[in-house]
Image 1 (cartoon, rainbow, N blue to C red):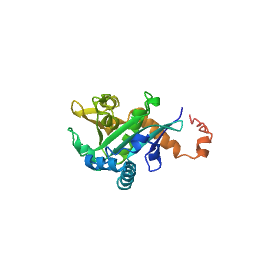
Image 2: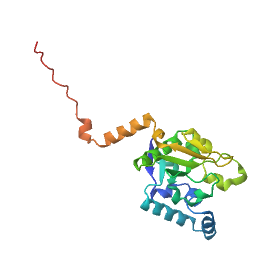
Image 3: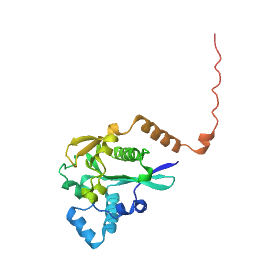
Image 4: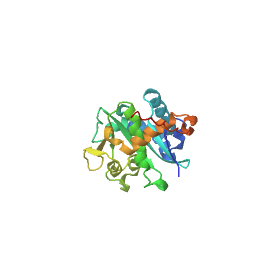
Amino acid sequence: MSRRLVSLTLDTLEDLPRSCRRCVYWELDPVSAERACVAGDTALEKEAWVSQTLLEWGSCGKLVYVDGMPAGFVMFAPPAYVPRSMAFPTSPVSADAALLTTAHVVPAFADGGLGRMLVQGVARDLTKRGIKAIEAFGDAKFGDDADAPTRACLAPADFFLSVGFKTVRPHPRYPRLRLELRTALSWKSDVEYALEKLLGSMSPETLLRPVRPAPATRSTS
């Protein structure tokens, strides 16, 4: 089973689940989001947001594919790009952090470590940009049918806790959680990433070249 992690682009945007592809819960403030839903323009608004964020800030999402099939994704951005972030009782997001808005793994691929893989991919990306942490608003009552639309747009608080986040502002429903990037990348993932970079920099001829033993040194005694 092959796994592949890629950055979100306008092309890979089409591989998001249909409901997420058309959702602007995070990308617009509550009033604008409601207006877009009434007008039926949510898919266009989503594409416009991704396009602007890519142009002004850079990568704002990761997708993971298993044997070529889209299996999960995460989206993230600075809080200034996420109007909905100010609507939570545990806001604002810390100034030194990027906000991880949505994390989703297709049920058929659940419990396979893809969620952790996605978060580590985000951590590597943001570390290169000098960002110190990832924060997220978790849903402490995920699975409660009382608020299905919101439930679909937030990840369970337990998921964030399971991949290393810690609660920085408690709340009975929407705790804010934080992951320090210096501790986000395990030793194993760092070594794998470094090895991948090393092998990627070598030519096929170098990789296939036999290693010659060093000549024996003659004793002078």
